[in-house]
Length: 250
Ligand SMILES: [Ca+2]
Image 1 (cartoon, rainbow, N blue to C red):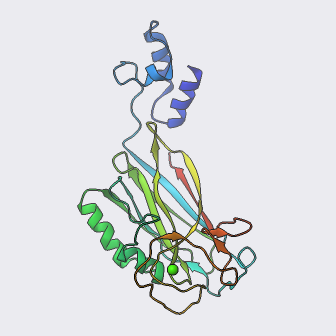
Image 2: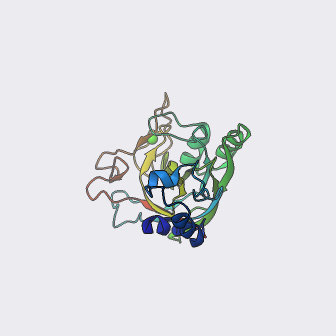
């Protein structure tokens, strides 16, 4: 019971008096988690809040020391764009074709086409929150933002172009923020580099070279003379190019 009280306290949705109440109200009820969670038990703790606000911090770990091969000048990450959504509201998926909006973001850093696509997703009822923020410019190491989620739209997807690059980007596809009836308190996501499948350039500064027909979204693989990436991370150290941390705000 102590453990359950602790969990409930951490969730910040129920006062301690409810734990006391449940422990004294019904002596015949076993205190198994199963029973406590039953929706038909009168002493069931109230459900988690319908909505949640998170702080998201995106930090680059990409530099000339960790990824030396053909490290370009002017490195940065394009403006961050994303959404909270349901299962139908995905904006990209590894192994699938990238949308025009994802391609535009991955090749040029432009958010315009992807914003239109997200607007369409919202009109279909699959999302109600747009993330539209700055990226990591050349002279900074990180960027922070807040976003909102709701139980109906509890998946997080965000993307940003690795720049300069032919069609490479980092992203999170459908991270679950609401698990087992509770909002995720904090999570760190090591970012891998994706290839959007629309440009066949092999180094950061390759000239435009359209992939025709368009390929699928993959983790970035590279010849050793072109970049240090294999399966989206450093081929040897497995270092990541960046990291995103999300924290539930009280
Ligand atoms: Ca490519």
